[in-house]
Length: 345
Image (tube, rainbow, N blue to C red; front, side, top):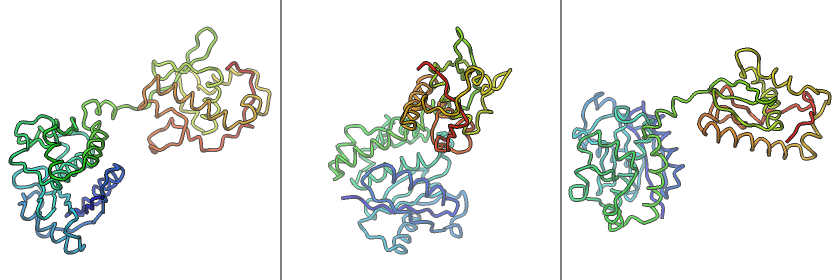
């Protein structure tokens, strides 16, 4: 049976964070029912940057329960910008089934957007709360990279986030406390899915940006270069790459120091005589076009890596306007503006 969890915040500044955390957990495929409970504003009773007692957190959670008529069996989880007086990142009350997670200051420990460490803490406390976990007995005083590390040194939280793991002893404690194997497995899968955002290499991928595309000629064959990487397109793939980019109106992004790459490719196809490319793509034009597009994208990913290749692959632009080189294949390609060329496959 799925567990019902009601998330809310006590700060109007956390509306977006609350939405982001809820969306992340909903997509997790963990057997929990997540409800966005909105805001219970406490700004008039809690001063900014003041330290808050656990009793105050539980009082706010109980107030939310009364307001929303939350059943006693459901979990209530508060995401707050206010630090806890004992400097905990989060904690749970097994008796009342209330949990708090502090959403502030995560930028001191990780470059990941704060919904990710918050979600990590939520999963940790859900498992602890449901199992009646006794942190005084079983939490690791010395951090080992387990979900139940105490993290007395706050910077040790990074080890926990990056490992995304639960030791065998703690798994046994969760199971003895009544947590199902499937919920533990689903939770571990989710923690593994989000752990990449906490790794050091993530700072590298965040800095990846589109590089200049240029041309290179080797033995009378035209090649596409992205920075120093050569994309080994066949002539067919090169032509498809060219016509889709030009049709999408993004050909001007193809620059080299001397000439626009569109003009260079146009020169390569010197027999520009036919008003259609029907023979070129065959009877099932869209099917064959998609086949070539798949080959083009695969070569881009294999040569450049998925992150950098995402700026050049042919497909729906799902990452927003920051991708000037992305082609939107769903824009209509007017093939009559192009010609058939007898190209080797």
